[in-house]
Image (cartoon, rainbow, N blue to C red; front, side, top):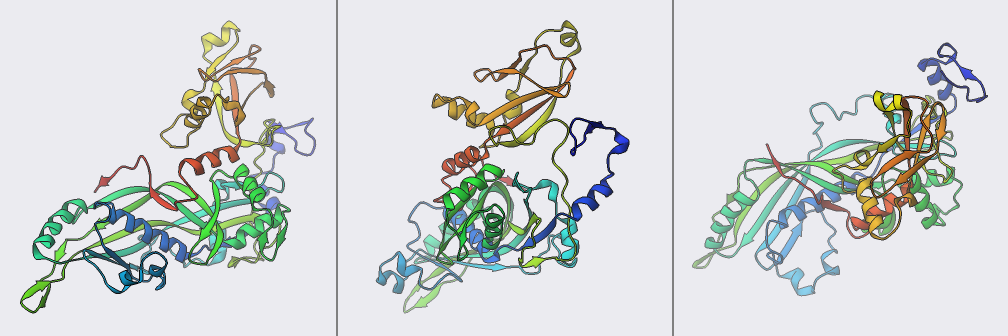
Length: 450
């Protein structure tokens, strides 16, 4: 049984509820889905930056006197170095040549043979990370893998140094082996999608720009499970929106290390090159799916077939609390029979619910907040529902326990956590230095060979 949404005073039986197919038809008439393809060049540049950091981290700082990356802007060197350094390439010199494998499809997993209608049907609207509670607009993300082959070349003066480096790179780069790295990555969000979200949320947009970006960012981080940042993108010379993803799977496979015979200059040998090729499987966004009641003209947009979303309201539990915070998670609490039959006040420990290995878990953020002598209730609101109504509770944040004011009538209760996502996302951005880095290995990164 559940409540009638049109008349909450009356209950509806199971037989009165519409079937999933009927719900699909109802919401299909009200909502449509637009697919927005993100920038591939942005994902590619992040991958190149990650691999550059990965390779240079094997060496001491300032080991390489000069550096060259194929495909980068020809004027980028003149922004950071003296003119003479751009003419004379001192050694050891590093050259990085990346190449995208355009035929890679992850063994027929990332294919584009379906057409936009099938992509719309396959989009996972249940796992939307952004939900506007006012107009119920949602955003979800579909990921894929990009395969980029990197050729690292190190030019040295002497054969002795080249041989030593050859042996070092065999060990440091795990020659003829593979490894797994977990990275924190900034995914670029298409500007057209952000403008659509801003317009649907009634933010003022002038000449394709949101007038109050600070208020818009607060709005995004308040209703998103993933933090948003707005920062400068050097490729286009303007600020854009990025979404921070943590502990993303990156797989590397290194080839054999090679060393050449150098070049003959008069009576001496010079310019020995030690090289290694590394295959990188890097996670990138495939497309963003935006659910709204307004048709938006993105790169992929189906104006004929309309897609559906499910109503997130279930039973008497409100989706938003009185502070405007969305539900973060819910769980059922089943009291032990011996305790339940005693008819005493219940004591619930929720420490294990909010503690996890993630860097931005609710437990770690709560401990961080308590160190500043601020109660975690500033960003977490917990409600307990029993017998179809909210029960008053008392929370002890020192022991992470909940004590009911009254005796619970039913053995099964529903525990609901409401979280200020703006606070969570701002914490994540500040801890990860989100405005100064766009790709970095995770702090708790583990290297796994295979």
